[in-house]
Structures are given as structure tokens and as C-alpha cells.
Image (cartoon, rainbow, N blue to C red; front, top):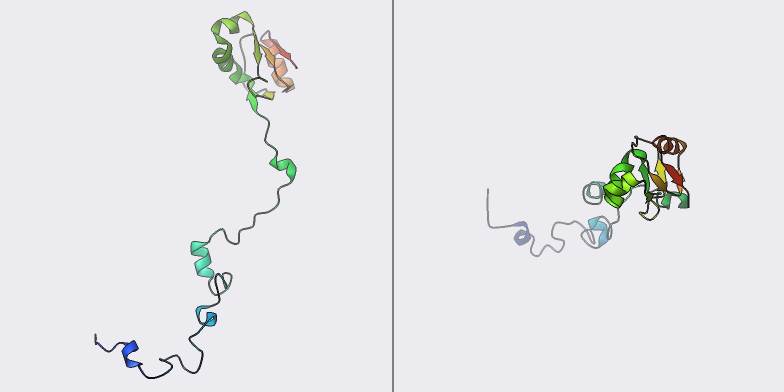
Length: 142
């Protein structure tokens, strides 16, 4: 039942305002600590809800894992790339496709190639070399 005498009005003059003996409604102890204290204990629900990344395990990465991976391309993608870079006439004429200048470091062997291409690349797998030589091309290592 609503009434106009709220707790604040009722407690006027009672010194402790319903909080028992001295000091029970003061300082950080009443609010569970200062700042983010208790994030793993009594404020765990707040941590889970609003600070999901606070206690995640990040782990360790060795420097070798931080190196960028070498740019690669498969043999099956070479024809389309050659058409874009050196054009239709250049592909039929057997011109050189320089993958190093395009930023590609390694040639892998997935797929197939039907036109003879002279490919300039730093590294290539054995299967990639075989497929290019079967098509009548060659691999030129810089």
C-alpha cells in the first residue's frame, strides 16, 4: 500500500538510519571493495556479463609463429593469372610469368595447367615442377 512516509523520512533523527551500529554503511567495505575488486569472487556475475575478456588465457606464441606466411599460388590458378598479367598473346607465345614481382614466393602443385608457361618463382614443389614441364613450360629460379 503506497504511503508518503518513505524510509528516508521515517529514519530522520535515528542517527544510524537503519544500518545498525557505527560504520556499517560507510567506505569501500559496504560496496564490496574499491574499483574492480572481487571480480573473481563476489562480483563474478558482473565480470562474466560485462568483462568477458578480463581473465582469458592468452598463451604464448614463439617468434617463429609471428612471422608472416609466404604468399603461395597453385598450378591450377596460373593460367588465369597469366591471362591477366601478360595477356592472351603472351600466354600463347610462351612468355615468362614473373611470380616474384607479383609478391608470390612459392608455387604449389594443386590443379593442372594446359598452356606452356615459363614461370619465375623462388620456391616450387616437385609436383608443381612436373605439371609445368608436362605442359611444355619450365620453372626459372632467380
